[in-house]
Length: 159
Image 1: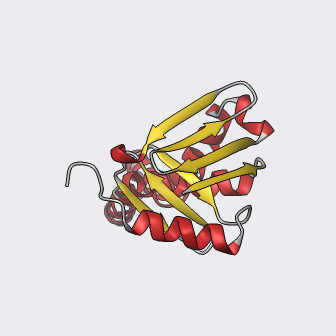
Image 2: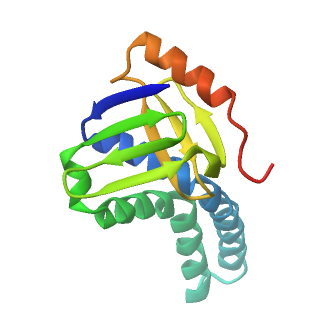
């Protein structure tokens, strides 16, 4: 296999990728927020003059509704400007190579954790929080079929 393609910078796709990567960590925060909301409401019902009850309630609401968007926005701001110029991606039998105008990364397929396919992309996971997004848009149908068959044949590292 040898697939080489230009991938333009896509801010929406970067946001989706960050949400995908952060989802497991944020899953625990939402139920905790629900518990805080219930606790805050119970505290307000028992004694409406207690400021701590309102603080617990507000924290619960933040955990349920605000933490995920804030975390994604913060992560977006933390990204290097190097990625905004797009990249040249090369996929071969041994490596995935990401070449930006000012930086380059190479990852061996042997270090693969797992591959998750969506209608728009493949998320190639190298560990828990390092993902390479491989978009389907720049590929031809033949390249998609070839890459799809290739990743189905890969064995995740450590298994």
